Image 1 (cartoon, one colour):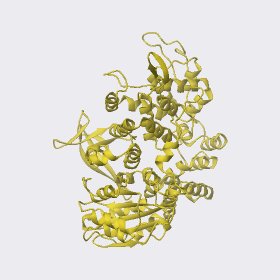
Image 2 (tube, rainbow, N blue to C red):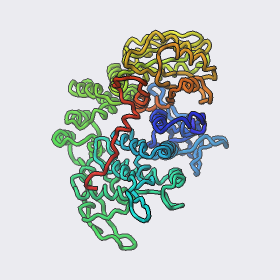
Image 3 (tube, one colour):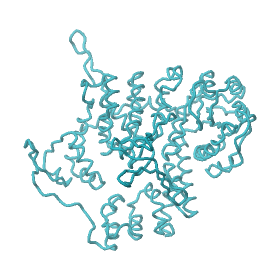
Image 4 (spheres, rainbow, N blue to C red):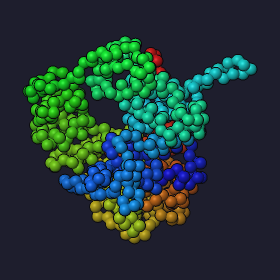
Amino acid sequence: MTQQQIDPQRLEALGPAERIVQALTTYTDHMVHNRPGMIVADGRSKTGVRWEPVIWKEENGEKIVYRVQKVGKRQTRTRIGVLQDSGQITERGRGVGEYRKPGLFPEVATWLYRQIADIWKVDNEFAAKWASWAFGREHRDLKVVLAAFMLVQDRSGEPVLENGEVLFHDDDFRAVGEAMCLIRAKADINPKLLFRVGDVLNLPSISAINREMGFGRSARNPARGRYYKAVEKWLRYREDNPKMLEGLVKAGFRTTVMALARRVGYKPTSTKFFEVLRWKQSQSKDGRRMLAIGAEVKKADSWEGLTEKQICERIVSTKPNYKRIVGMLPPTIGLTRSIMAAAVQAGSVSDADLIILTPTLEELGLLKVKSVQGRWKKATERAENQRAANIAKRVKSKEAKEGLQEASDTAAKKMLEEVVRDMRIYVVVDISGSMQGAIEKAKEYLSKFLVGFPLERLHVSVFNSMGREVAIKASSAKAVENAFRGFRASGGTAYYQGVNALAHHKPQAGEDSVILFVGDQGDHNPNHLVAAVNDSGINPVAFGMLNVIGRYRQGTIVYDSARRLEIPCFEIEEGIFNDPYAVTRTIRNLIAATPVQAGQRQQKRTTLVEEILKTPLLTKPVWA
């Protein structure tokens, strides 16, 4: 769904807080893809296009593009078309998509940037607080785009004059963008993300938005605001603190730091900068370079020549991170069972990496080794996202599959634990005949969607012409799958019956409630649904809508009903279920964003909007 497809009245009614919620709960795709792919038009996507992975092979002088899919344990290749020099993919003279190399996905970056710009137009400070709030979160794509925007927007501390005298200086929100680039923290902007901020600002579509907003003076060059200045400060600080620079090299950011220096034309103060980066210098054509010209540089560290036993001893004694281990392994030895075991024993493999590497651990037989198995189980218990559920599809043993699924369920519960406090969740699922072909998809989504909610405050119903309650017997994906296993799409569509089936579950004193609808939103009269909600006593503070079939259509029953009830209705795009990081993040943001019930005297839950408003604006570190 593109922004133009939204009912104009509903869009106009959204304040900056609700627009933020829409951006947080409907954005689903990655802004960067590290493998080749193609884009095709997709009217249901926020960006208007859909990305999917592909490969190409040269056959009879033509580049043939294939879609690679895993079916069970086998990979299948499906021919898509011929890759042209222009990047277009054609089949029998018809365009079927556009090939994309690994890297930035401009359509997603532009969509996110537009959301920020729209919020900025309504409330400058709120947008700056959003950026400050987002800095400590894990949503890297959003953080990068917010940093890019704050670096170039036009509130930069300019003096405000009256009769030629300075009355005061305007707010400097560009300093928030600088702070996002320069502050060191657990979830800070690393060198790759810092480089990506510049990539975003260099996109022609982003430059067009900046010109439209009045940011920058050039009609030809992209607005970069304080980006170059921020990168120069970042580089200077690391040059002045060589241990930090050495740490970046060990962490695998050597070439990225070099790329940042090239991008801004950085001029180091000593040859030490080049020595640490192993960056050999040659004189430029204009002869402007002054340092380390022709000087030899140290070769990259390597374990070439060491035996497997010696490599294991090095790992245990020096405890390098896993990425560095892989980079230093000689190809003649590779990643063996003993080396992997040594890396786990030394603590070189993080919890997240242990989960990602489960198929490798299984293949090497290490999940049967007691010490490794114990470390792996602890990692699954501390899982922070639902990626484990996707990885479970690639392992063979029942124990590994169940362990990964439990990790996914645990992550969902932990992420939602705080935000669902004092919340009662009602889920109403359409199983009418119009859901033919989509009911299985709805079941799959619900198994990922519901596991994080506490059972005592989760109420689920299904409806067609009639409604009935569905009992979820355990807080796990398997229990959700079991609860829905007997349903088939049939009958009429009566949304209000789904609400009536749950009306006996009243919110307790001090609780807020939200109703999440799963269905296809046909063009039905909202009168019955509005009446059912009013009569139920559920008194929801918001609706959520997961549309699992067909295009979004204006005038749909759930949105119309929400408008009449004067409550917000937040969209949940089905694409989140393709992203293991997005499911719990989206649901958490949606629940956190729901208003607190008016008239509550003892408010225990802080809404997302209140949390953002309470966030102090980021300030640059003292050295900057």
